[in-house]
Amino acid sequence: MRYILFFHIFYFLSVVSASGALQDTVSVAAAGHGGAAVMPDSLAARKSAPAISVADSLARQADRYMLDYEFLKAISLYRQALESEQDSVKRIALENRKLQGENGASMMGYVYNPTVVASHRFSTEDFFLYYPMRDSSWRRVPNALDSLSGHPFAKAVYVPDGSREVYFSAPDEDGVRNIWHTEDRDTVWSLPALLNEQVTSSGDEVYPLLSSDGTRMYFSSDGLYGVGGYDLYVSEWDEKNRDWGVPVNMGFPYSSPYDDLLFYNTPDGKYTMFASNRGCPPDSINVYVLEYDSMPIHASVADVEALREIMSLEPDRIDDGDVEGKAGADMPENPEVRKYMQKMKEVKSLRDTIYAYGIAVDELRGRYAASDDADEKEMLAGEIGRRESVIPALNDSLKTATSALQAIEMEFLFNGVVIDLDKVNAEADREIVPKDINYTFVKMEMGDSLVMDIEKPEPEFDYTFMVLPEGRFALDNMLPEGIVYQIQIFSLTHPASIRDIKGLSPVFLHRPSNGRYTYAVGLFRSYADALSQLNKVRGRGFKGAYIVAFKDGQPINVNIARRQEN
Image (tube, rainbow, N blue to C red):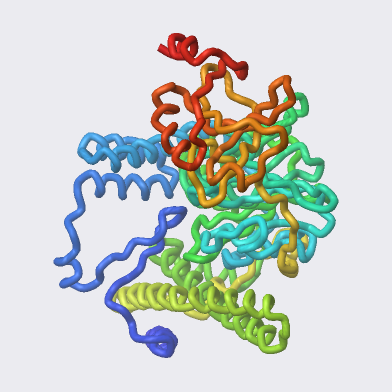
């Protein structure tokens, strides 16, 4: 058996050496929205690593408790970290994480235990294509609605052909993703409008999806009440107010301290689906299929181990007979063996993901070579570059995971632990098969590039007094309420032209009862402001220009206006 183990180690060393030399550091993927941490593997690196403060050390330990659903322990450590932390910015982050821990402890009082039909792990690049939604309806980002690519999860917008309205996630002017709405107005789509302040948070909102009857909107957010990462929310349509109501966190097991996305009830009323990266390697995500329950029963779960079991969402599996039975007999269920099997699955998943990326890039290159459309070739070139840029990171993750797997194997070898690698491989390769329900994941096609004619926003008119190369008439001649001063430039028997106003802006038209066209420039809230610009106006050739005053849009004597102003 030890010969088998040495051969297995040599096999993985060969896999790694084929894609590059092993590095001296081990990248540890931090679950959820927090990204990745790098842990030095050499003594020199450890000596050169910056010292970790007491507060940071406590916070990291608390973060691990959060991911393990030990919310009360996490809260206690966050409090201790706050007592040690003096940096105001870090304190804000710690307060937020403590609040998430408190949310998690509160949400343990309202837990739903669903019947899990199936689950499967997919790439974050296209997991949404495995939902049984309308084919060719997901449109790759960037597109006409969402111009910003590079988000770890928001990769596409759902727009089926024939849609009359679309809810979608897109960044605002500060780069924060919010939910927007646009509707088809026959010849043009309406200018996208942001949803109300109840749905909009300071964080990102992604993957909005309406229920089949349009009365509920499901979406993910990392800025609303939650337990970390992206949580799942539902907002009900308020017919009376014609607006969306306050979003409600969907609770455990849909939300978690990890990233939970894309909630969907199948139109046939059989299944509920959502995706989560809990327990996943980087760039991967699980899609869960649950039995649809029209009246889910929620209960309090005080035991953390019981909560973990619910949150794992393990499907019922078909008895695999001898394979499963013998594996259970030969391999004790201890933490070391479970860790080894999990690492084996991670390695295999990464290898499958890299292979899938390679196949996808080859396919895109073929489409690029066969295309004669310049726009399509530009789009394909960008997609090829984006996918190719991901492969090195995946290779690095594979090297890291393989190195960790080898370390476990060497530890087993030196400690005399004998394992049956054939059974471990069989377990790692085993597909999750639903019990009594034949559910199959089918990959849908990506839709064509999104082409939409969208209304252009009306440019805001700047009513600040200016002298420009070309003058501008005011967009709206109505004067604001209160006291306002202007500089009258001339009065004509006919309308003035742009040339007549000699670069002044904004120029207002007033039509007295005698039928003449009277023009004045500027909106000044004080006499002193108007006076400071009077000589500039006269210098443009309007020698007889003078200051006039208005109150609530009606002309008044300048001296009276000045007294009231004071």
